[in-house]
Image 1 (cartoon, rainbow, N blue to C red):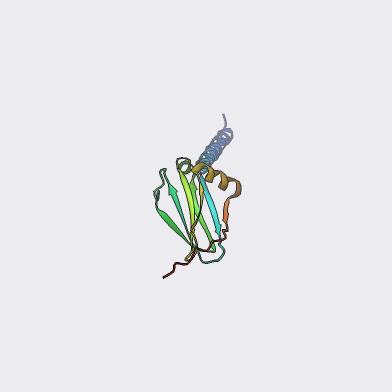
Image 2: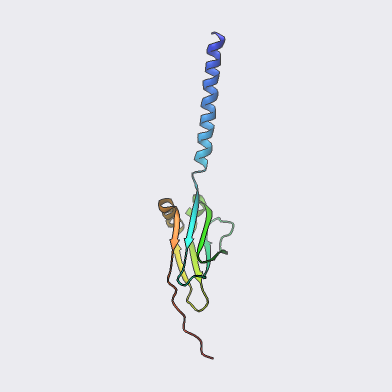
Length: 133
């Protein structure tokens, strides 16, 4: 075999190895999803939190503060963690109004972010009765 043929075979094998390695690396990331949160409230200025209940999430069971409405943020979620999750809860709190929550089970939340890639929520807050002194 001449040197030219050897180099062609070497080049093709190297190119194939790089292509397969890249494909394997990219397929390993398919279980990750970046989610945009766009949360508002009527009236504005409510505090927004989320909680993941159950599963192997490191923040499992803790309320995570996202900010006050309007909130636009990005969070990274892993499909494997969400599959074992009992609930993902969003909560909105505003002084003088009842708290409101929106809940999903882990697979249901993953389904929603797969379809929409964004979580929209704009609840109209219900005034709480004033306490008499």
